[in-house]
Length: 449
Image 1: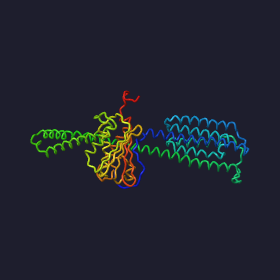
Image 2: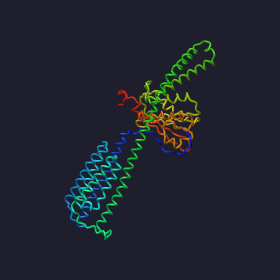
Image 3: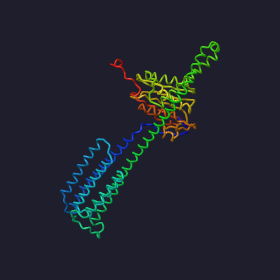
């Protein structure tokens, strides 16, 4: 738990990041969905425009052909909707082809209704802008070239539109009204859908940034693993030598006779053993989620032994421990799990040496460990960067690695670590571990009939 004071903050969670492929696939699907919604508006607009032109303006249009084209566009949109529901990745080429269908349908409708004399010819701009937002540069310029070619072709090849521009009549002119409707439609659709597409792209960029951050953290863990491995090899020999020497001293008659020396030797042996445990814990935490020194135990026994060991090896004013695990079950315990919880408890003791609370409960299919303290709480910046390396307000070089390792161990086990500030003063860190990652299957003989 770190410093500066702050009022109650909402829980901040260190969650696994989505992969880059997953983020890109999600963005493509969202963009395809936006195009599907845009096309439904286009289908509805075509039917409405054809109806108004035929019944209200009394224009002689090839109704059967134009309605057939609008119906085909509706069927294509149904097929696009079924494609979207498959959930498979949507690539740039597929979006490009979809936009080409829209351009082709617009071109056919304009050919049947006056070509470039039709005020709705400016809907080509909508296709170009949407393409610029969704597609790569080469595809975007292809859309521009194709739309310009269609525009040029329609200026020479089209069925006549039986409607005089009558520009002198102002907005009474059907042509001017059509241009106004086209402008308003373009503006509304651009604002609505470009805003949504931009949001999708921002979410994708945020996911990719998170993936890069996770990759950097994983690389940092690998480096720490190499450093810890070297440190373990370097420290292993002197620690083993000290353990042997202290063992010989405990059997030395002259030293055994002195009670003070005997107690000092026992204390030194305990500290040497703790040093070896710390080195092993760092090695396991930096290298992999589960260590080799695993042992079978139960949830209650694991939490009880963990609390007792931490109480005996740390000096704290008042350490409260509450075990609310109502349904015990067998599990696998190792040094990594213990070190993960110890890191959180040690952080709490540093900012609140007079009082620390550990609560253990079983929340559905997960083990929930909650550590509380009476310290100053987390700063907002610390909450927003929970679990990132070297994010600490303790003022020590290399600080913040304890919580960083704990977050990564929990993440590799499929768990999560959250933190929040308590009312008034203090903070709370919760460790949630799925039982599927730590529990052992219950033998059939132990099942309740």
